[in-house]
Image 1 (cartoon, helix red, strand yellow):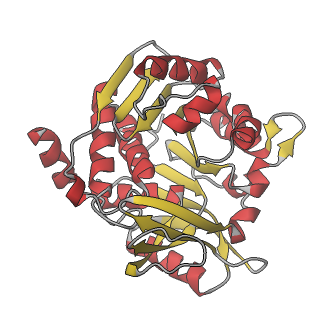
Image 2 (tube, helix red, strand yellow):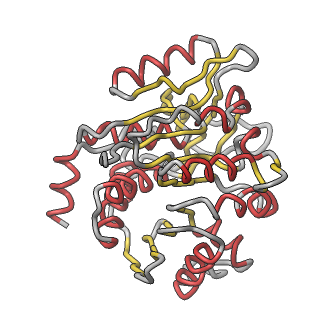
Length: 332
C-alpha cells in the first residue's frame, strides 16, 4: 500500500493588511499608523506558508475560493512560488477575494473582516483532494458560510465533508476563530465526530465547559485544561485534542496521554505581533504529527513555531526554516 504523504490546507484565504498603530483611539479621534504591511492570511494560507518555509519537501496542497481579481491572481503566484499545488483553488466572479484589516497595538490585534469569495467554499471543493495526501486541514469553521450551513444528516456541510474525507482514508484537522459562544456551539460540535486533530485556544475551550478558563485576575485555571480536552474527545475527536494559550499548551490523545507544556520565553520587546500565532502553533503540530513525533515533541515543535511567529507583524512572515527550528529546539 502506498504511504500517504502531504498536507492539504482548505478553507479561508484572506488578504491581510496589517496596520501597526500607536494606540487604540476613542471614537472620533485619530491614531497614527506606524507600519503598514500586506500579506496573505487565513488558516490554510498561514499553515501552508509556515510548512513551506520549513523546506522539508513535504507535498502541500491548497483548496479554497478567491475572487477573479488581481488579489486572487496574486495569491496563485504566491502559492506557485512556494511550490504549493493550487489546483483546488477556485476563482469566482461573484465576490472579491476576502480581506482583513488587522489593527496591531503593542502585539495585540483587532480584526475587520470581509468574507468575500470564502462564502462560496463548499464540500464539493474537496472532492478532488489527491489520494496520496495524508492530512486535510480545514479552517476556519464559523467563517465559511457554505460549510457552516445546515445539513439534514450530518448537522453541517463541513461535517459531511469531513466524514467523506475520513471515509477516503484522510486524517482530518479542524481549526476555527474565536467568535460568539452561540455560533461556536451551533457550528463546531457536528464536525468533531469526523475530526482527528482539533486545536482551540483557552477562550474557545471555555465555551465547551461553559466555564471561564481564566480567573478574574487574568491567571489561567490549569485544572480545567484536561477536562476541556476530555470534553473534546467525548464529543468525537478521534486522535488528538490540544489547547493553546499565551502561557503554554496542553494536549490529550485518545490513548489517554496528557502533556502540558509552558511556552518558550520571548523578550516582550521582541514581540511585534501575534497575528497568525495560533496558526503557526497548528502548523508545527501538524508537521510533527505527520512525521510521527511523540506528543511532547509535537507540543515543543508547535510552541517553537508560534514563538518565531511573534517576531513579525504578518501571519507567516516570521516562520523559521527547518535548520532554524531545530537549532532553537536543541538550545532549549
